[in-house]
Amino acid sequence: MIGYDLVLKEVPEKSKVLDLGCGDGVLLEMLQETKKVKGYGVEISEEGVSLCLEKGLYCYQADIDEGLTDYRKNSFDYVILNQTIQNTKRPDYVIKEVLRIGKTVIISFPNFGYIQTRLHLLLQGTMPVNDLLPYEWYNSPNIHLLTIKDMRKMSGKFDFKILKEQHFSISAGERSRIKKINPNLTAQYGFFVISQ
Amino acid sequence: MNSLSEKKSAGIVKTEYFTFAEPPEEMILESGDRLGPITLAYETYGTLNDDKSNAILIEHALSGSAHAAGKHHPDDKYPGWWDEYIGPGKPFDSDKYFIICSNVIGGCSGSTGPASINPATGRPYALDFPMVTIKDMVNAQFHLVKSFGIKKLLAVAGGSMGGMQALQWSVSYPEMVNSCIAIATSAYLSAQGIAFNEVGRQAIFNDPSWNEGNYYGKDVPAAGLSLARMIGHITYLSEKHMHEKFGRNFQDTSKTSRRINSEFTVESYLHHQGIKFVERFDANSYVYITRAIDYFDMQEDYSGDLAAAFEDANANYLIISFTTDWLYPSDSAKQIVKALRVSGKNVNYTDIVTDNGHDAFLLPGELLEKNITNFLKSQYSRLQISEDN
Image 1 (cartoon, helix red, strand yellow):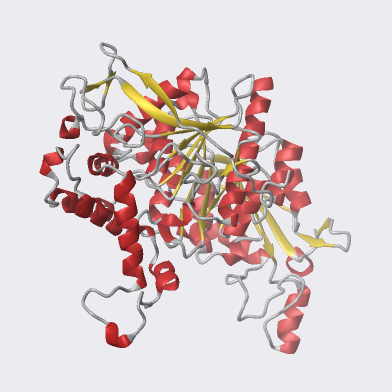
Image 2 (tube, helix red, strand yellow; image 1 turned 45 degrees about the horizontal axis):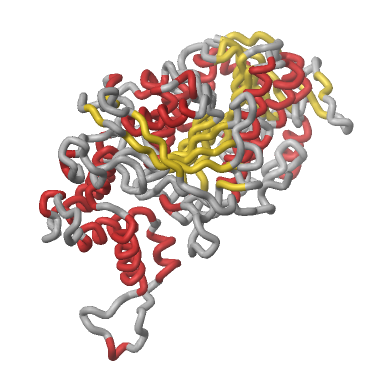
């Protein structure tokens, strides 16, 4: 449910949306119900696809690292990479592709620059394990960790526009709190809206 | 309703026959040849609703028939070929949907095929039967579907060759197909698939009783057809499933009794399948239908661009492959999915993890049942909504 409220706010009604790494399809279902979007999902696990089917969503099983090349340019109004980019093998390639196939892209990820994460590495000297990054280094699906600053740096190098930043932390009630002051240190999650 | 735990049978069913294309109104085949009259054997399960919006057409595979569910007689040993999936409370729920399963032309289970009488000669067609294609099979079924007054099928569904027909339906009759369920199939047969089919045909052609297909009323090419079926069965199972099912077990376990002709269990299984097949299948039909599968190529008319083939289709798709299917590998399904995506179609796809190989679509499988059930459910409700508007 991480950042769902922000995504829901960001996506306009009746948009055509592709959710990459859509999991059980809860976000897509919410988008369809509240924003009447035309939603599509891509999910790597057969369980995920099955759960999407149960919700009446269109979803196909695929590894996004294996390619989105067959989609035509600007096929979607919005492409969503919610807590997915850090799991991909080739984030550079995936980001290039989503910018091509989507007019607008929403990327949200656990911010490795978050103060607690930094302190964990600094003080304990081991890979951070916390609510954001709940895995040990040896079983973590998060193979490409990044910070908010890293994403900004990337926008220059990969020549994409940052339309909006809404970095956030999650409070107990699961509502996202936007962090405006020094988010690379204070926000648990980065949230970017970007386009080519 | 709990559709997964409550499994009932479609009950006692009866094969019906539909005849059309009476001369001089014969059906024109893809080859340009004319065929008529044509009879299609078919069965139905469930009831067609008032607005005729709940009809599903089931397509069978190479050796299938119209008898997809239930039993013809209470003491039949086996039910129809897709009884696991068709019936009250099953994925193709006959309490909700009107399900039609039709035998293909070229077949030998009640439909017009090489064993039928050629009206021109008064004798069985044998090899005078015209070449039929997957498209022709679909075109023939179109007449059957139309005879019910059905304007749009809720779904066309099938596995293997049945999946080819389902895909072809969505392209040949875009306005008539709301959704398409294609399982363990491909948009064209691989070279390996053609090769296996050819070995099967050669087994038939080399049978001393073959006689260029003119064996009706005499000894049939039983050894050849049985061998073709044995080869087929090898391709339907995965290596792992076969090993788990038969291992290295012998029919007769004593080591001293081993002879050239003593049998491993797997051998006796194949022999049994071969012999059983000869009792119910015509060798000429086997030759014609395998040829139809070989020639099937959806991208042929679109210079290799499969997405272009689907461009005009209006259906929503559920594509399913099985991880251990080496006859119709997952990659051939992924290719279909990719083409559908490029052409902007709504598509669900899953590659189900199983040891059961190509045969998985015929065997009980929780995920397959669930996915079909849920897909049909949402397709049916979408159709209702769009028709209300």
